[in-house]
Image (cartoon, rainbow, N blue to C red; front, side, top):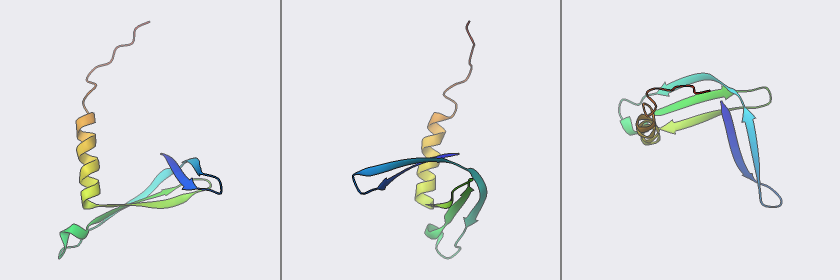
Length: 80
C-alpha cells in the first residue's frame, strides 16, 4: 500500500510518500448506535505505522465509488 501525505511545513506544504503493508483490520460495531460503527485499518512499514479509521458513511461512500470502477475492464488483449 502506498500512502501519500501532505503536511504543513515552514515554507508551504511538504509532501511525503511512504510504502507500508496492511497489518490488521478491526470492525467496531455499536449495537445501540449503529451510526457509530468504525472500521480501523492498521498499517506498518519499515519507518512508519498508523491507523486509518473510517466511519460508516465514509466506508459506504468508498464502497459505492469502487463498485462503479470495478468491472469496467472485462477483457484485455496484448498487442505487439
